[in-house]
Image 1 (spheres, one colour):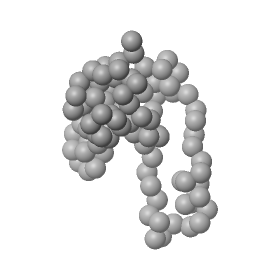
Image 2 (tube, one colour):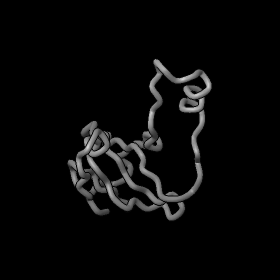
Image 3 (tube, helix red, strand yellow):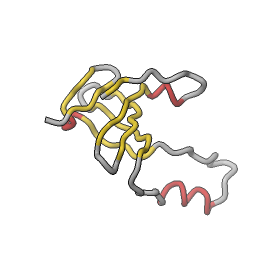
Image 4 (cartoon, rainbow, N blue to C red):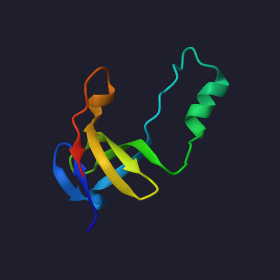
Length: 95
């Protein structure tokens, strides 16, 4: 069984999680151009490699960040969502 480490609940089966997309910087909708906004909304890189992604533990409703190697399909580490909201230093939860 494939497991993912939730920052709140520990190791859980991957069937308990939902993918939320690659972590990307959102442009300011009040100041960006229509082209910048449509690029943010509709375009994704989709390239293989190591990426930060949004994931949700469905049972608890917790959103968090996972560092995932899409080439090898392994989760390297997970972080609480608060780790991306400023100068907080992320605490790594190894998989």
